[in-house]
Image (cartoon, rainbow, N blue to C red; front, side):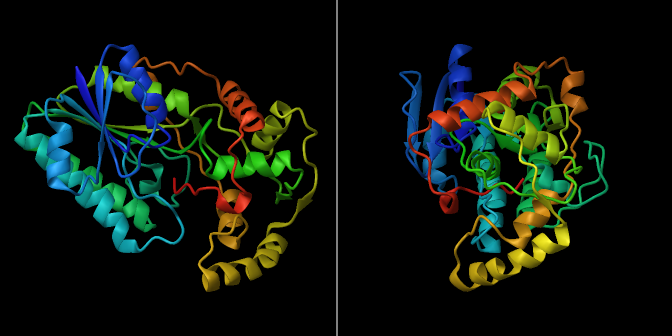
Length: 334
């Protein structure tokens, strides 16, 4: 079977595409940026999902779409761009799929659709997104739902992952590992807030598993690995896997926010995405607990424990020769 993967040069695709090949599928990838060549089973289309001709060319002959491409950075992005890429881009793919009679669609959404609701979240909880990113992802889900309802043979799975981490990713989890490795980590508050996270190889395998489980209609699945660790336990696991002493220094959250205020002023003034801001501190110290029981109930079994995922990521961090400075690490809006 031939599968189209959008955002094929991105982090998650790096793990999904070889998984597809291992199952005997050929893959067409589309992305604005060049990425890994993968192998003979892979054809790359350089382009934007908003370009109708490019999408039609990439989608020709495929039977399944795995839609990863998105605008997701949480700094320096015009609000309109979230809707243009995440909503209009999804609609463009759905229209092309309709023209080519493609009936299977897997969409990577985000737990950001839940907003800052009482936690833990679960799939039956009504979404209440607050950020442009979360709102655009929910609107994209609605487009897919409408597409499915127009034809009873269409099949879709929506995956709402929490923060995804692993080798080759330089987003928020990377920054945390980096701060511990450089002995710059300072705990804020008591560290009891839950931070649900998902290891990328597990997330990729979940998507491949759901592709085989597709049925008419649309199903929604959260994704997060368990156990759901408190921040202090997550930091302890990182330190343990870096073979370092667990950081013990802590300061009250109000003091941390006050100290970070000047960095917010600099970030707003210069447009530089600084690794330390009051917004980042507040986000890191707030609970983000997202249950993912629905996918486990289907029989899916993550191949790696959360501790193994942290270990593999820590090992990659220590061996990575291309690590950027802390100020260049990416962002994660989930």
